[in-house]
Image (cartoon, rainbow, N blue to C red; front, top):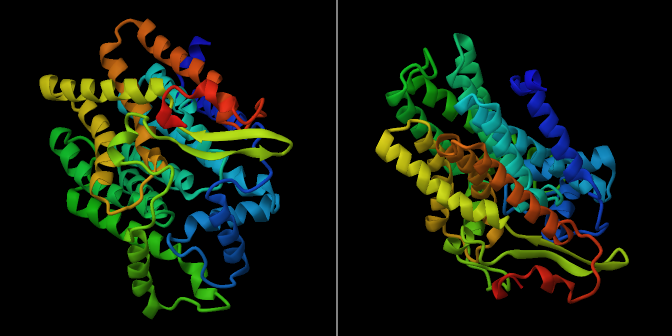
Length: 410
């Protein structure tokens, strides 16, 4: 067992197998379309048939992935959601990789991966056909690939950096929420290179930026390939850029108020979650609540402060960038013109919180009891909330009350 714990790959694979088993258990419940699946699944069917434009608020890749999933597993609940569960597993393993590459500690990497596993947001998005899950998986894997490149040698540095760019381009081709990460990657390269000149050996900032820009642009453009073959109103090179402008207009339009809308500053505090489902379905009352695990959400904020403190006081070159992952991904929503906004927009920032918690405990948790206590508390809440995260059969219409800690959760 001790030998296994010193080898990251077997541990990562075991973690991935555990995550996939958890996410896939009862994946087909409910057997009806849930929440935004009513938009993306029909759009995936239309895309598969190359009939014409559908759901043109977002790029095509996420819907193409759902269409491929349907082609592989069939047009049913398994076919809608199977690849979402795989994307969430990739997030868990990607977080493990990020922490391992940063701290070279199996314990720290495993703690972060397990906290992601029991963070409610990742579990819920693993079991629904929405674009956010695929976008987040591409971003997390891109960060891991770029850190992998930083430790490379020779040609491997540029190739791994290129892989990171392709993954970021894929993320942008899934949902525009990923676009700021391209700028983050470019700026992070320069900042890290200044403090750690040995990172990305042989790769200068100009070449790195050129590879990043070219790979992102080429990959993003390639994701629109199916649109050029539509039977009705096919895309052309002349209409490609105007289509981007049309998407921007749709993304920034102000829509009517919604019951579950919330201001961006409330998300970090877990104030206003979103009910993806709460109704009688498949013969029972069932619910799916998009909520953050309070242990992860709230202790994560303390961890962000701790990492910033270590960065400012001790000039810890690792903890600063880790904290900035969360800060940058969250700060974007303070300026993005999106109305109304919802808690599930916080999905990607919520993934970085376990990374920050693991990093803070790596530095300050000199006694193992601290990381074990945080993990056990988070796991206990996951078990307690599981019925309203997984669409389990509930006792009746008022059953949700037992989990409502605050009125704003209703």
